[in-house]
Image 1 (cartoon, helix red, strand yellow):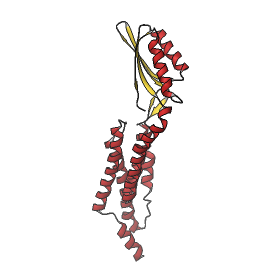
Image 2 (cartoon, helix red, strand yellow):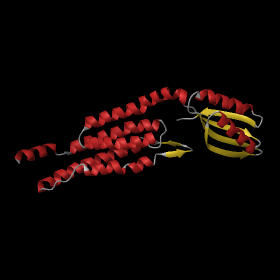
Image 3 (cartoon, helix red, strand yellow):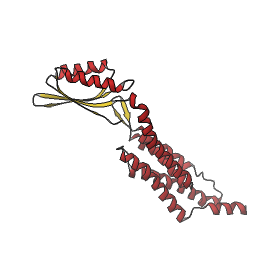
Image 4 (spheres, helix red, strand yellow):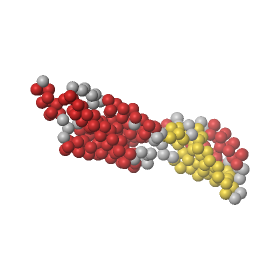
Length: 239
């Protein structure tokens, strides 16, 4: 019994250790959040820092509750509160997911928010090395593997934003849809604006698949040469 008390006393969390854990959690959130903010994602540095910090506080609180009530014979579960954090943080991740036409954006950021919460729990439990190693692994996934993914998918992915000026909106829209079908492109985010006697049609065209760039080029040329279009502008859209 004396040995058990001694071991528990050695594991008890002190003020300096609490501060160290909180700072490590904030650092992990800041590193991941900065990368997300740099790439213009919905959840940035402060959001990730708050998630990591909150998860760390919950884990430290769980441990403190355990040490506080253990001498009285109670056996509180230190992992119970942290399990609720992992489940509850899902609502925050869902807020970063957006639907844009047939495509969905924000899944990676939602996953990073959830993973940062897990890092905060690990650090809050006193596993500083695991938390910081996890931070390094997340940066490798978000930065290195994004570059690798773009290299591998370069010839299979081509999403472009188009802006078409015309006089007859109905006929021009029919031309756009017909050419999109011919070149196996998916249209979304179609928007029509009117200025004086001219219309401007904005839309995104997804040419995903084989020979994506070649199909996009033919679509652009044929749309430009069509007599019903006055001008056609395009630029590559971010993934």
